[in-house]
Image (cartoon, rainbow, N blue to C red):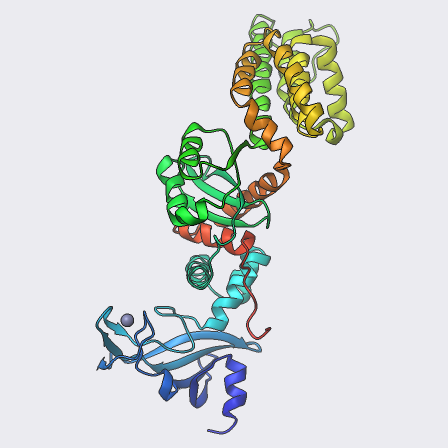
Amino acid sequence: MRDVSLWRALLGVEKTVIERVEFDEDAELLVAHVRPTARARSRCGVCGRRRPGYDPGEGRRRWRSLDLGTMRAVLEADAPRVRCPQHGVVVASVPWARHDAGHTYAFDETVAWLTTQSSKSTVTELMRIAWRTVGSIITRVWDDVDAHCDRLAGLRRIGIDEISYKKGHKYLMVVVDHDTRALVWAAPGRSSATVREFFDLLGPERCAQITHVSADGADFIDSIVAATCPDAVRVADPFHVVKWATEALDEVRRGAWNDARALARAEPKRGRGRPPADAPPRPGGERARALKGARYSLWKNPENLSENQRIKLAWIAATDPRLYRAYLLKEGLRLIFTMPYAAAVEALQRWISWARRCRIPSFVKLQKSIVKHRARILAAIEHNLSNALIESTNTKIRLITRMAFGFKSPEALIALALLSLGGHRPVLPGRK
Ligand SMILES: [Zn+2]
C-alpha cells in the first residue's frame, strides 16, 4: 500500500503494518486493516515476551481509533493467541493498544487527558463513548502510568487524610506529598488495614526517609505512623482541628435553635401568607428561623462574610451571648494557625484556659482534645505544614468524586484522582 507512513502517522500507531484502508459507507466508518510488524508479532499480551503461537483465537478484531476529521475510525486485525509459560494461553499483544483494550493507545491517552481537563458530557460526546467506558479507560491508563513510574519515590513530608463520598457512605484514604503538592496514593476504606496498605507499599527503606506526617488526629493512623516511621514528626492537620471547632460551634447553634423551636411550639399558630397587622408576635418562631439561617455566618471566615451574614452575626452577638462566645472560641482557634510559632504557643495556652472555663460543654470537650494534641498542633505551625494543600486537595477530590459518580468501581475514581492531582499527568498523543 502507498502512503504507509502517512497512514501510520494519521492513525498514531507504531510498529504496525498498514495493509489497506477502506471506507465503510453504510457505517460511516474508516477501517484500517493492519498487523504488527514482524518484530512485534507473537508476543504475550501480558508480559510482552516472544512466545510460540497457540491458535488464531476468535478471528478478526476491531480497535476504536481516534476520529479522522469528522469520521470514526477503527483498526482491524487478526487476534491470534500465544502460549506463555507464565501467563498461559493469552491473546497476543498488539503494538497499537493495551492488552484487553478495545481502543488504541492514542484514543486512551486522549480520553485520559480530556477527563482530567473537562466535563463528563464533553468527554462522552466528543469521544462518542459511554461514561463507563471512560472509567475503564482511565483505570488502565493509570495502571500503565503506575507500572512505569515510582510515585512514592523521594517522599519526605506527607499528609494522610480520609474523604467521604456517596453521601458519606464510602471513604477513600488519601496521601499527599507536602513538598510536590501532589496526590500520591489513594485507596478505598478508612481502617488501620487501609493505612497499613500504604506503609507496606512504601517499604521500610522509604519509611525511614519520611520526616513529617500530618494526619487528622485519628488514633489508628497515629499508632501505625509511630510504628512504621518512628523518627517522623507527627503533626495534627490544622484543617481538621478547625473542623472540630466548627463542629463544636454547630452543636451550640443547634442547641439554641432547639430551644427557640420549643418556645415556638407554645406560641399561637399562624396561617399561610402575610400575617395581619394585629397578629401576636412569635419571637420563638422567628428566632428559630434566624438561627437556622445563621449557619453559614458562623462557619465562614469573617473576611469572607457577606453584608447580610455580617448583620446576622451582629444579631447573634446582641441576642445570644453564649452562641457568640462559642463563635469567638472557634475563630480564636482558627487564628492561631496563622500566627508565627512563638506567638502561637502563647495564644494556644491562653485559648486552652479560656475554653476550659467557658462553661459550654462542646468547647470544654474540644479543649480536652486540643490539650491531647497540643504538641502535634504546634508542630504543624513550627514546621509550616499549612492546611492549604490538604484543604485544596480535599476540595478537588470531592469534585472528582462527584464527577466519578456512575463509574462502576472505586478504582476508576482513584485513577481519575491520581491522574488529575498526581505527579504524572496524562499527555496528549503526538506532543512530545
Ligand atoms: Zn507472558
